[in-house]
Length: 346
Ligand SMILES: Cc1cc2nc3c(=O)[nH]c(=O)nc-3n(C[C@H](O)[C@H](O)[C@H](O)COP(=O)(O)OP(=O)(O)OC[C@H]3O[C@@H](n4cnc5c(N)ncnc54)[C@H](O)[C@@H]3O)c2cc1C
Image (cartoon, rainbow, N blue to C red; front, top):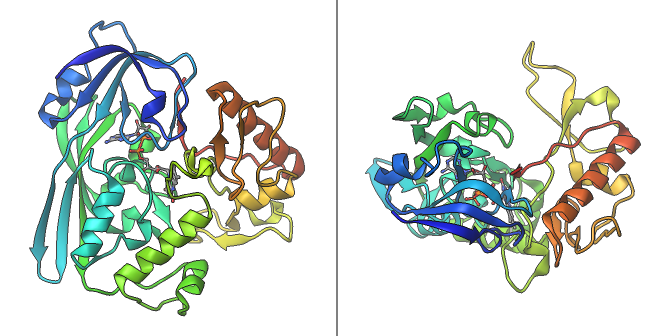
């Protein structure tokens, strides 16, 4: 394990923004985790974890402490009757894992094709797309607990998964996810299609189970149309994907025309609350696709999707100024505070 100094982080992120890490360690062996997390100077801030860099915003000034770049590899598939337990190291590419599973006729993560980044980050924010969340197929997560200094295996039910969140995201300094095990189904058919736009693209009814490769192709087609499939030739993909999450609000506080979906309405779970579309709120606050402002030079809203903020040739401070402008516009128009999806390092 080698530690380097003053390593530029922008090329390691999908935004291509931010300064350098004072100390940088690329971790390829999970056994080195303990020493990798310990900076040379015990007074320096705790090490920050970086994996695929697709949901992180690095400050222009860089990171004063150590950045540990998770690059561990390894995938094991264990067949258990009709079910298959797929265990992958944190540093594996998520999209490559989805492709490999689909090629083997394993269903459960096909609608999550095309999400950039690593396997280990998927439980962190419970990645989701096209009607499914990764939490639905996570059997267990192996973590290094930085407080206790020990390795622990957590069952999926112990990860406190919620919409784009988990216990890992709620307590970002505590756990390093080293390995994730997914329970997938051995079948050539996708799990039932839930997302209406996906069903429309596939030409099937919601609930249908088209062949796995057809679902993957349809999702990738939709993602490409929305600038959500990484492509160096598409400037709209220099982003972190959605910058804002869909807010959950009291239904009574929402304009009648705003889209809404029911959330957990069990007794005591906050009845009367609905999830609404952050993209609708932004557009109806007067911010269209492709929006720019002189207050945020070099960055803009994606020309394909209002939720994505794109770096053309700007800076992190410009990106955060654009985000603040959008947040303030939505607050003024609707009295709703938007929450940010990526981790913003300070
Ligand atoms: C074009 C584009 C499209 C996207 N589409 C989607 C989408 O459809 N759905 C969706 O949910 N997300 C989407 N994202 C966001 C992003 O791809 C996911 O959040 C992804 O899981 C981030 O993985 P990463 O390895 O790049 O994490 P990083 O950006 O490297 O890190 C993100 C956060 O996770 C932490 N972290 C990373 N690895 C670990 C680990 N092993 N243990 C503990 N903490 C860790 C980091 O410290 C950081 O706080 C998209 C992003 C882009 C750029």
